[in-house]
Length: 99
Image: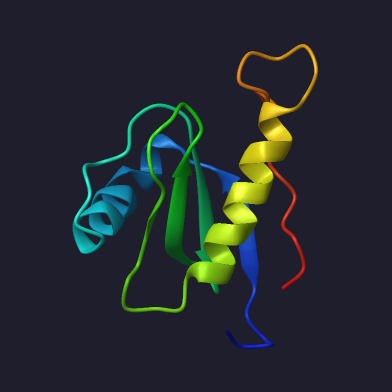
């Protein structure tokens, strides 16, 4: 992990489909479906966490454990949001955490 990397946690969009497919293939996993959180590190998709169940995927050729930890924390926070099915905001962006 670099002290200078920029990490952005956000909800996936349709435009992320090719990157999510690439991550799943690199991680020898099935493609993710449903609502997904993604983590970009310095502008590159590094990991993804399904909000509707399933296992997260990450680039095995890059340091990813700290990114997966951030994704899990965001997913737990969204799941614990009161009054929301599965937690989470339906609009807007998730705020990036400082690296």
